[in-house]
Each structure stands twice: as C-alpha cells, then as structure tokens.
Length: 349
Image 1 (tube, helix red, strand yellow):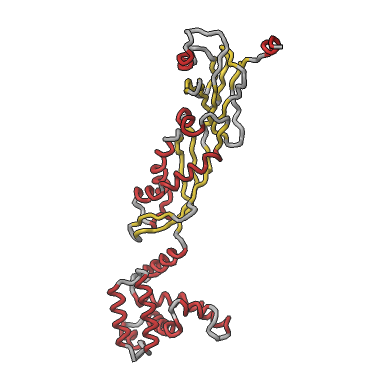
Image 2 (cartoon, one colour):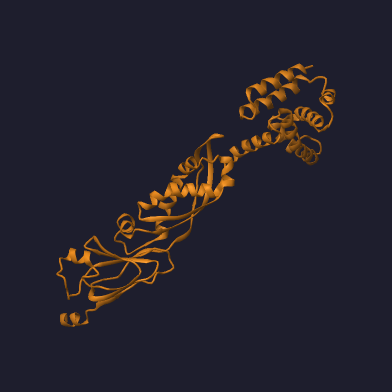
C-alpha cells in the first residue's frame, strides 16, 4: 500500500493563479503534501506578483513572466535550503500570489463629525466622504504586516483599517492645505490631494500605495450650518445692521403669512415658531417698517421722515433680545450692539 502511494504521488510542475472576482489580495498556492518539481514552471500574470516563503522566511519574489524553477532562478531559496549549485530532487516551499492591480472605488467617510481648526471660525466640526484607490506595492511588507500565512486575504478584510487611516489624517490634510472651510467646497480637488499626501505614508508602512483620493462632499452639522447661513446673510448686506434686519424680515414675511392663513388668524403655526425664536409680532412690525424704509430710493432725510416717532417698552425689549441673540452668536460685534441699543432707547415712549 505504501508503495502504491509513492507511485501515485504527484509533483507540482506548473504553479500559477487565475485571480477570482471576489477581491482577493493574497492567495497561497495549495501544496498539501505535494512537492515542487525541479525545473517546474512558474507563471505570473500581469497585475500579479509571486513570492516563495521557506519555513516562515521570505525568499524569492517574481513579477509578471514565466520562469523555470532552478537554483539560478531561486538564489535566496537555494541559500536557505543549503543546496549545492544544482539540485535534482523535488522541494517544498510555500508560494504566495498577490494581486497588484488597483483596488478602485473604496469608500471613506466620517461616521461622526471631525473637529478641525479653521482660520475663519476657529474650531469647526465637519463631515466629509469620498472614494480612494490603492494597490499592493511591496508584497514582502504586505505579507509580513498584513496577510501573513493565511490561505487568502481579501479587500473586505482590509477595508476597516484603511478607512480608519483616511479619517485619522483629515485634520492634518485641512491644516496642511491652508484652505478655509468656506473654500473647501470649491477646492475639493486640492483638499483631496492634501488628504492623499497626508495618508500615503501610513499606506506605505503596510506595503500599499495610495493611488488616488476623491472628496465628494464636505458639510457642517446642522446647528453650525444655521449660524453659517446667518453669517452669509450678514455678508450679503455688507455688515450693515439695518439692512440685515431688513433681510431677516424679508425671509420671515412669507412664513408669517403662511402661518396666519393656516391658523385662521389665531397666531398659531409658523407664527408661534417665529415667536419662539424671539422675533415676536411687535418685532416683526418694527422690522417691516425698517424694510419699507430700505426699499425707498430717497435720501436719508426721507428714511428719517418714515421712522416711527417712538416705540413701546415691550417692542424695545423684544428687539433688544433679538440683537443680544445675534451678538451671542458672533453675528454682531459689541460696538454694533451698543450702538443699536442706544438708538432704540432714544425711541422709547
């Protein structure tokens, strides 16, 4: 029986790998108890590399091509095996194949807002997402650091680690790019390049090359976006407080009208929401008067003639509360607030 087993024993004459479509990065050629025939053939296709590992030690590596396995083509393995210049017996060695093609359309994104330092807003929490692609550049390093002695290692198994590396370097990328948050949306290519430069060294330590990074979206959390919208609105009127109040009124009037119609004049619906924001009906009347003044094309004297002779205490208080809220959010400076406060107190009846 043992003689029959010896006679039936098969030697490996051809070593090759046809890469499957399941995202395999590393694959070990199945050896079992078989041995590699001296003079056997190794075929490495384009977008592949092969590597011999002898008793846990990395030996010879091969790029694309067809090779006859002899001591001449396996110098490191020959040294590790203490072979003479020529050997005729079959030999054993682990053979690993690696896919070196680009792994494209890999997704990265922030699960939670990332805090960055911005030159305009100070500390800002942003969300971002996009794509990246990479390839195995150093099979030996990838084998020793990542895939090891496993039969197969796939893209999916590496995804979490690489995604974490991308997110880890977002702050570094924003800082090195020097791009303010307000300009990030218009400079996504520059931001992506900065992110690639910041992350590439971490990929190299794993035997990988980060080929490309894209940024598809950059955004703020909702509460910060509201403050940004108010700053943008202020910028639209050149920082003039009177014009900003007119802008706010113009935005609120359609909602007041919609709320009044929906509530049958009862003051509910959107009107109640607006009062909850500190606007109030009295403040709306004052702002509407200011809007009317601003729309007039006359001289400053005409605007002064249209100004109300005086305001009631509750109207003044409502206006001051709104102004204080704008100051607390950084939309108004202390000087602008004090000037408007003094102006309102003069109109108190």
